[in-house]
Image (cartoon, rainbow, N blue to C red; front, top):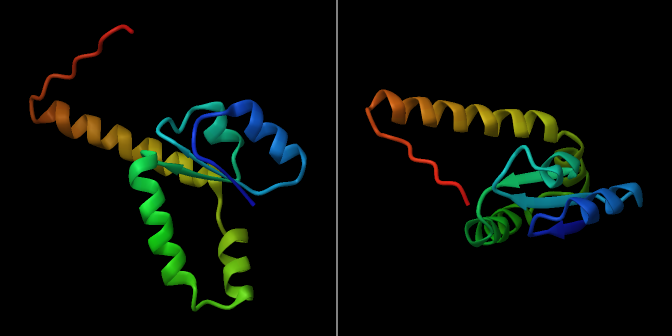
Length: 106
């Protein structure tokens, strides 16, 4: 298992080809990294790492079989779809409240 804390689609794809389970932390659920990872955490690294530590501590009491079941039961495509739906719903909510969304070219 490998953690890719910053967007790196090439590395993620290479690790997956090597048979590794890749956990990626990425703000963009549409990025190549997010789509190539085994498990994508759609969040900021600063927020995600402490949450990962907390979840690991909570899961410490689980048996190996339970942990394997959790990993095998995870569907990254469904996870990314849920993240996109959350973003869509949040943007719709903001627009309906009359909040102006400004986008700036970089």
